[in-house]
Image 1 (tube, rainbow, N blue to C red):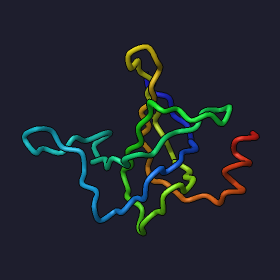
Image 2 (spheres, helix red, strand yellow):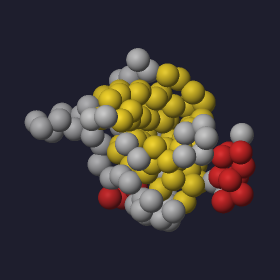
Image 3 (tube, rainbow, N blue to C red):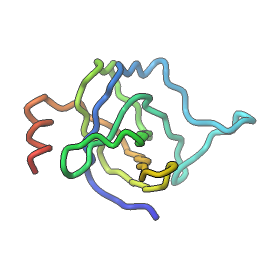
Length: 115
């Protein structure tokens, strides 16, 4: 099951340097495509749920990398997302594939938690 949503809120726990990110590939080096496009993993980015809680078992991949480096602890808005829930041991995990991410201000991040 994949759920389409225009926006998901996330947090970059570590800095993101787009120059250091390669597209996802299989063990033979062939690109793994999602909807016909390569995806780029954003390591140590966690998604927030509707209650503003961090979903520790979450991953974020994007079709388009950020154009500049993102600092650690930067709130992010994941745009045009497909979210796939799955089971990781005894907890529900989320895999998010977004078109791209946009940094948010801290105030907007707190406001997103209140919605």
